[in-house]
Amino acid sequence: MYWSSAAEFFAMGGYGLYVWGSFGVTAALMLVEPVLAARRHRKALQAAAVAQDWKEAAR
Figure 1 (cartoon, helix red, strand yellow):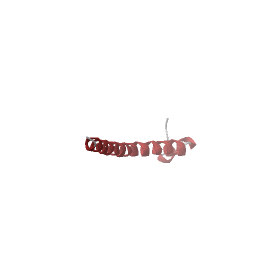
Figure 2 (cartoon, one colour; figure 1 turned 60 degrees about the vertical axis):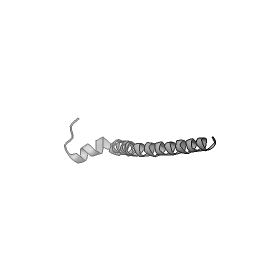
Figure 3 (cartoon, one colour; figure 1 turned 90 degrees about the vertical axis):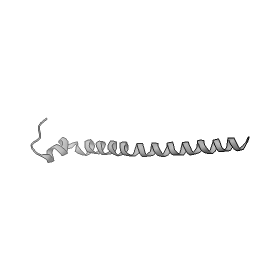
Figure 4 (cartoon, helix red, strand yellow; figure 1 turned 90 degrees about the horizontal axis):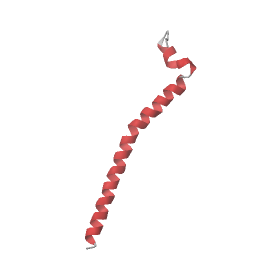
């Protein structure tokens, strides 16, 4: 594929909104997912520590 200008490249033959929108959504999700995973991991570790403390207190 050959484009005569940068504007033509970004327009993608009239499908630019869909193409670049999908790239944008994918990039955003790839940035947010590790943050959310780290948060879930931290909460799981805290819950495990609380459960361990409760288990040791019951002895």
